[in-house]
Image: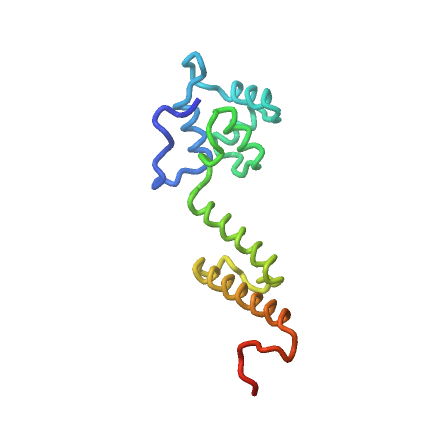
Length: 158
């Protein structure tokens, strides 16, 4: 079941334990009864995941801080919420995925990579410009290869 009033305000930047606690406080089963860690573990296990009540308790108290994606997915499905509920900043994460997709596209298009550069330290707009520039360079190189020597390439002879 989904939380009664939605998730906490994004400005609060709650951690995983706080978000999980919010679900336990505000979600109810089909009979209107609050969920327990045991019930969520059972639901997750019924869905094909392997999750224990003890581990859920550790996540709720913050003793365990870095659950695997599979664990997050299991808990989200057991509560019937999207895994994006647990993301620290969904917009930031979606932007990072977009940049990674663009980077992979750039690799495929240009055959180059930015292995020597810490791309996390570069402004996202700059990364976009670099990718666009590399695509242009690759397109020009492909066009140059297509134009046999001696044919008019649109440039005057030297």
